[in-house]
Image 1 (cartoon, each protein chain N blue to C red):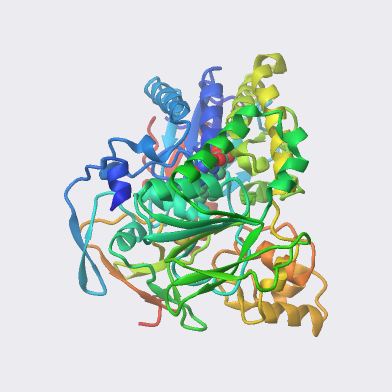
Image 2 (cartoon, each protein chain N blue to C red):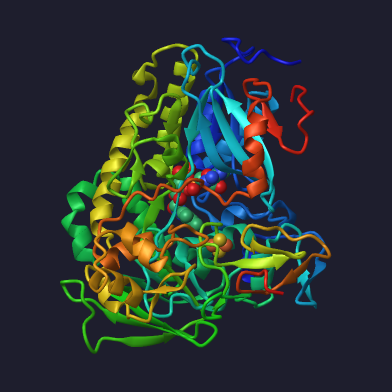
Length: 99
Length: 504
Ligand SMILES: Cc1cc2nc3c(=O)[nH]c(=O)nc-3n(C[C@H](O)[C@H](O)[C@H](O)COP(=O)(O)OP(=O)(O)OC[C@H]3O[C@@H](n4cnc5c(N)ncnc54)[C@H](O)[C@@H]3O)c2cc1C
Ligand code: FES
């Protein structure tokens, strides 16, 4: 994780969240998207029409490509939402209301 | 503690609400607070700085956040100034406030004497469900811009991100999406993105810029006026050489490849007309493509206020004092036209000074901001010249196949847009939108607007979105009720704690 070294980051202790039930480490202050990228995950949604995978695109809350379900609330923008210990994230299919 | 809403003057100094805490908003806040005006800075981000001075989240404990930035000293000045003004009680910073609408009631009031007539409606926190409002005597829009990306086959694959998006994730989250990146498109933003990724340990396999040096040379005269900006560009060039980043000019990305994730891109050379040279294609393996074709101003809030928006680039029109054509509403920074952080600082400074003077009932003396005005004029000329150089290849639509998705939200293909124009006879983007649903999804056409217009061969229309953010229906239903409450200048109230009306 070179960017962390470049900025000489000394983050607070990592905590655990889950992605579809699987445990994942996150750092304080990290957004959902940043934690997923750090874990090597780049797609977490499939589109409504074609079922195509999507993840981050604009990175700043404009495109809505990064939608994800956080603690049972669907359609949250992963690039904006900071994680908290124990958060349960779920990959999202279609509108997110189909589970 | 209640105030009579009909009273002509609220107690205390006049109040300016600034939306956006980027270079423009912060420069404006410091200028206005320095002139004795009370300022509230409302910003969607969790920390001040905007796009240019985006910071790693505090929890990441970055000891050297400036390593990912340039002009860090300017940032420190802004940050320290902001801190001092907050401590002195002149400026309030409201982070994590996502403004969806600014409401103006023209009857009576306004800056020439009446009570506050502008209400900034925001949604609080990451979930953006709790409403909050800020009442002010004047509003300054400093909402910046976002990136334009034109479509090509494969651009929806995970691993393909906007160039600014890659930069935002790097500066804010200290993360990158892979190990090998291609940075492509057109415009000055590609340079900090390529050098930033390289500094962060990513192998930048190529920087692909569709504009060639000859186009830049043709505008040399117009560009020479800002030696500092040219030196900045040269600095990036040296950095790219040092990091052995291969730079391909007059090249473009033709296709992104991969099944569920980006695996490679095909790039090709462009001929003098801006068409792909047959046979020049080459495939570059990579797991990240950071791509951008310039920036677009954020104009939603200005549009809801009825401010004039003009070409080129559909920017908010402003006069020499950075006033929009709507009384009590100023605008500064990239919302009034794309031109980088230094121009945003100059415009913000002028807007803050002007708003402060006018709020206090004076006609401002432009002599007091002569330096900023000179800088503004030079930088606007510089970026106008750059704008004519950094344009997407003239024939970019030829690379967009019928099966290429154009509207990412609604998954509308180029074929559907072409059919709407050809067989169904659509003559403008509005009709294309109604026939295809392009631009009707979550992002409300922010991503596909320029692409749909380009492929349809129509003028891009002013979008006229009702709100700047999606708003929960419950919030909309309640706004009317909150409005009938008591009015106090500079008041911030949230829907959750409506009795919490004590001084803050
Ligand atoms: C993703 C991205 C990355 C960029 N990175 C660089 C870079 O590395 N180097 C470079 O030279 N230039 C970069 N730019 C260009 C950059 O926009 C300008 O140089 C500069 O930041 C413009 O300053 P500004 O004050 O006008 O706007 P910004 O810096 O964009 O600030 C606007 C602020 O307004 C806030 N805002 C917008 N809408 C709302 C709303 N509805 N409610 C509440 N708040 C709102 C935003 O959160 C933001 O904090 C980038 C642009 C983008 C889009
Ligand atoms: S990546 Fe565009 S909204 Fe999150």
